Length: 420
Image 1 (cartoon, rainbow, N blue to C red):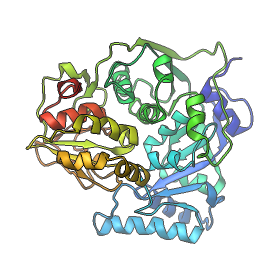
Image 2: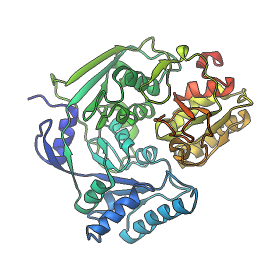
Image 3: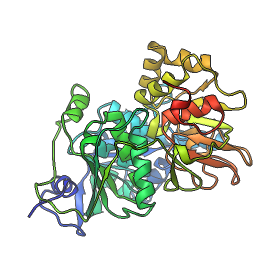
Image 4: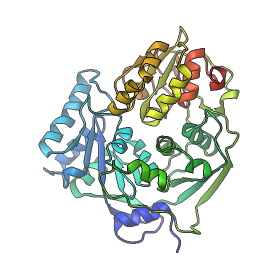
């Protein structure tokens, strides 16, 4: 019987063939938590009476949501994570100044790679499917169980196939692909399933762009977003990944639960309107909505390639006088490379405020909270009511090219309006 990529990845973690719909115990390669979800898992571990995690080397702890500490409560959350890492002897704890936004940091540090099963107490753990891993978000209680036993209880999902034909136009990238897809299938269009992304347009994407696509699979309700490992994957993990890359592909002739196929040769940059990532329109149909703030960053679009795209449009230009532009490199390494290559000078000369790596404004935590009635255009992944601040504020989602152009013009704009 032909097997999907998701089934083959889970079969490797279970140690036998698996069937869609089956509940399985699977061996976990990486179990991740942050400063929001980690303290809950730590408390649950104590309630279970477990004094030591099964394998400290498979635990990754990244304070990234409310850091640098926003207030006393957030300082306490970070302290719980820090002290737990020290007590347990966890080698993969990343302190402020050396950390990054978790879903950009782990691939960069070589902690996740092809063939693995990765679970994280954060819904955007599905990002690592871009590396050919099965990666899924879990609750803090489930994470505590994985820390204690080294295993997780999962339901083997059906897989929907998404095939993108053609060549993407200039200024159109991974964010536009996934926003377009969400606009087509809705926020529950892949609920409880795996989304496998394929086709010539996906094969041509960089690893940065692939991670953007898989990052937002959860916005369609999917358990996982997957891209089969290929030469692009191997080039990325070579000299970086600390394990042995295990390359899996779906069997020839495998049958997807549902198949979607689009020619994206003429796709416009996409924008998601409030208050849903699936409320998507081409940028040419947005009507030039005026904005107060632009955020370029997050686990979705804070990688080096994203900053390069934004800088290309901002170079020699200035941010609109009534717009705040926040640029947040996803990791310290991305930040340093942006300094070395002159991107930071471009951002600051244009009038942007640059932050140390943090999730901050993405979830309305700090460093860019919106006031009543304000509008933001962000390269983040969610735009629910009150997501970035006041319940009457609005968040529009787009890629870095649209974000940079909009920051210059003070309204949602096509990159071609300012770029060549």
